[in-house]
Image 1: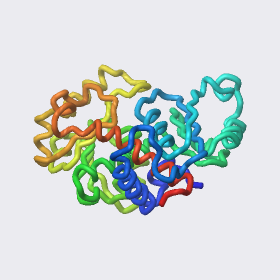
Image 2: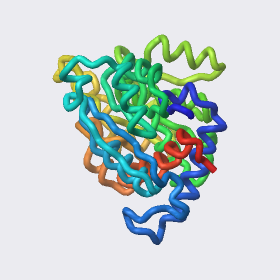
Image 3: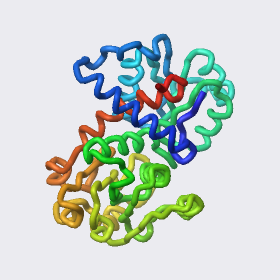
Length: 309
């Protein structure tokens, strides 16, 4: 049994194995319809329980399709529908019940502690569908997408992130260490990655490059990533934050600093951080990126269930 919680805790060889498997599975699905099951139905009879404490579109739908295409089933819950949220049942008791009924548990939460507590008490695999410090399923899928479009290992690409320092960036930083790719980060001075994150990078004998000038960050980039500057539960002065990121809007002029064939990726939903011209333009591959969540998460499920080829 393996959990999938933070990229930094998963061996690089296992992450590569997941991506290789996802590439094979995507290729084999070209002639199959949405709910047709993969050959051999590798997770036949298995059930994934999903619980959402935060709003979700892509994670919810992509995991539903992932387990279905592998031959299994899913049950989706909200914490306020359980005794955990309404009746004060402990996480330890809830985890034991989930372990009794299901074969895997995917949690999307606003609490890193809750992820750790569930991990402690579950006897089934735990997948982090998003937490305050990590969005590992999104970023591993993004690595897959970058390699698929650019047709080369991500270690040979210059990756750029322009935007807020959030859970997606934390996972992208972890990926830069695991896959050994160059990562430029463009953000205002007050929104740089935390000291803890930078210390972890240094501890692993790697470097990330932080710029308070978006043009410098974008220079020479093969891929530019971004995310919404104001997240759903952002407890800040939103007008002030948007103003601070005004210089960092990804438009055609900023993209011109990158390589001519640079692509744009965004984990969605989008806000004012990117222009329509870029987001809907020929360099943008955001819809392909969203679809790839299904293929990569299938291989993540197989990894967690001990069925990865």
